[in-house]
Length: 339
Ligand code: SF4
Image 1: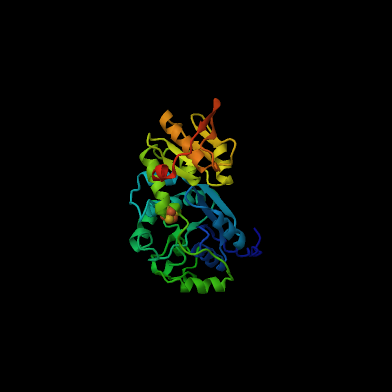
Image 2: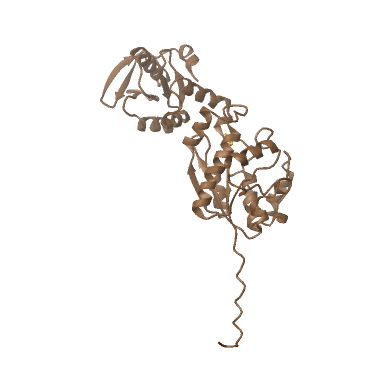
């Protein structure tokens, strides 16, 4: 056995912590990413895609921050919550508490798959009266079930230390204690991190907009919310509920018309004017003869019929087509059916 001292192993470099941050594209979530990166953590971002929330702002923010963005399909999740939100709705059909909890839970799945240490959000304590008070943050944390791995870097100093802070993966002393609705501290931070453009806070979620929620509630009460296709169709055209119960969508512009044309499926009916410029209408799931005639009248009414008393309307189904000469329906008659 040799007496020679064993060579001293160089100390292993501390492991770089890995965080996955929810990114809406708003200022707070961007700041959370900057703050975590500032202490040397590796951060990636995640956004949740559904018909109710555009992800273009998150994509832009991810590009600006040069952070990898994971896109998670969220339509099934959010529809389940709109049907039956365990913690109720906000001011419209927005189940914000459950929605937050579900997003964080889904991010937690990604955390496990991707070998991240924690999930972070840009939530600020008391910034929103319903969904970001202390009680709501606690409910979200409980329901998301991340076992101490949910970090709110912007308000961390006002909240109990998380497991990733006590384990030393995240340096708590470099997190913040923001609270309330003032945006001043965030603006100062934005300046510090060189952010010039960022969307205004909140907004952007259709589930908070009364006009959209009227259409969604109508769908829920008639066809139900099981068909993701019918929910996506709420984004296109003027929407009518005809007297016989059929749903009818009328394109407002070329983009709507093209989208509705592509949507023709089994059981649907598509209508458009033949000899004059006009809209495309889609009746998803079809209609009885009475509603079909009314839809054809609406199609003619929105067409550029000039002095004509009748317009040719083509009625297309998957298994065939017909043409009818149709009188434009007076607008005062059908505007009351618009959702
Ligand atoms: S505003 Fe919309 S996307 Fe945001 S938490 Fe509420 S329901 Fe979810």
